[in-house]
Image (cartoon, rainbow, N blue to C red; front, side, top):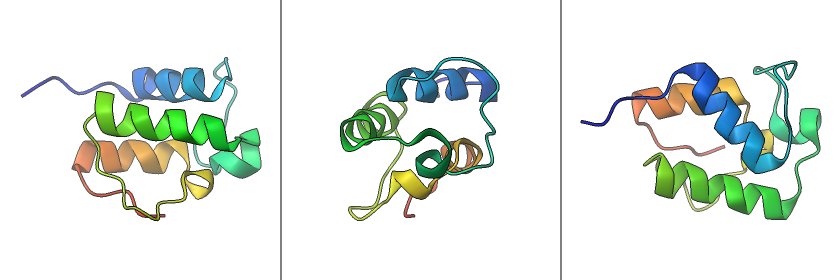
Length: 83
């Protein structure tokens, strides 16, 4: 089994994909409200989560309403993301 990313590593990858840097992002707030993430960024985020991190996203998952903390919890528990 591949080793899991730490929360900081996971957060940094998510923020890089959505085009934000820094650690002052509140991991508990949803991405859409906090960062104003656009459709292209959400597509890139979905690719990261599914292809690189092995997560399963529901077809109707709305990543805009997901927080980094919730995504990380789903990553650790290997549960499907379905916001």
